[in-house]
Length: 388
Length: 111
Image 1 (cartoon, rainbow over the protein chains, first blue to last red):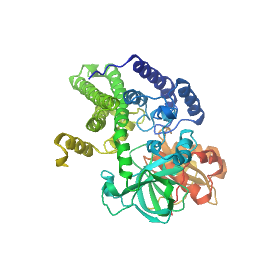
Image 2 (cartoon, rainbow over the protein chains, first blue to last red; image 1 turned 45 degrees about the horizontal axis):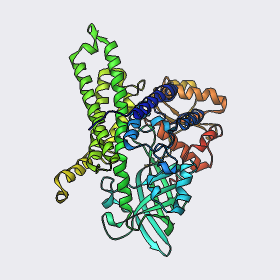
Image 3 (spheres, rainbow over the protein chains, first blue to last red; image 1 turned 45 degrees about the vertical axis):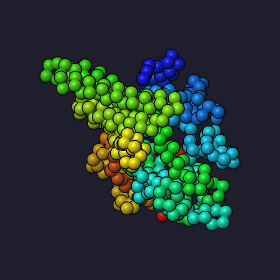
Image 4 (tube, rainbow over the protein chains, first blue to last red; image 1 turned 180 degrees about the horizontal axis):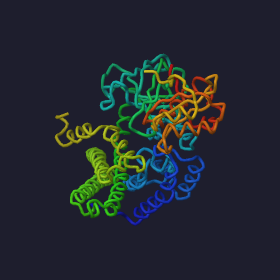
């Protein structure tokens, strides 16, 4: 495959890199090392900048006013946008805007009026509620939240775990079991306003992540109108699964940025730091770590770009997306680990971003489908469906 | 597991603050009626962690602030947000000087 960038892609990459280095990184010098947001005035100013650049709402489809980036260009931007301290979970602190919940682009016209368009205008926020205490890796079978039809309404009861943004959301996309089918054919997606009686955010779930915390939700006999069903009754798992597959490529790309930045920091450090009378860069042990980092970064980048190019060309990309997610999360974790080793004591302090990347990258090997599930997906494709 | 910060109140003065470890964490600062004046965190930006953060609170509130209680945690950002949400749930508003935070704080219904 040809991984060389087009002139336009190179321009976008260079512009994004300059934006991160000149606008985001200097602001971080004045923030708490675990901060997850900019000062409101800085945020608003940078949103105006990204809008003037034509890059606001990166993931919004072109017909809804987005910039219409292909998956490859979006992945290249994700690699650049994550090259700062908060970059893994708050790339550029959200100043490039969000797309809302991608599933809503498939909603009915009425649902779009009620939830999609207000979200695109920044008037409403949504959250995605799939995972439950009973498990997240096999959601089709793990979902125990029940939906029972009662006239023109559905009554939802159950709980969800590790849900980001629910405490600030105006609505949630909730997946519930609505038939006796124990698998993927018994799940329905409901759009539920969070002020619906019975919707509770019970607690913050504290994790290795510095910000963007997760929450635990409980639903006590929530009554949801029939018209709030997204898609077909018992057809919700396809909606959830589509999101999981699409998400893997930008998710993987975002892991590479911190690894690239950490490698640059380590090279500078190795050249300037002296031990036993010579720079670290002259020690074979350090040289090999730097080389292994480079191999991991390039390997991850190639896997991500291959998956993105297949997605752009309309080919099947499930195996490639799973491989990109697996390789990028694991390779970047190894890179950050080596970079901490090269830096020594200062590497584990909050004076540098390495410790935050180390913690937050650990989650990436679990989130959006752990490495083992990615291997399972690839094994099915490589061995054939009969070995499911 | 309770999620509220319900540890015993301690006297807020320089002597007590100096005796604390310089660790990261969260705290309540209150007046003599145990009305919470401030919900804060000691982050990595505070030179001596909890000690520096509480000295700043003492400077901010002066003699009005007489008590505090704290919890050490490396998850000071998410725990701080959680404490703000809990206060909002319990009292309907944040402590007076933190009401600017109210628009960004989420909501919990823990009970």
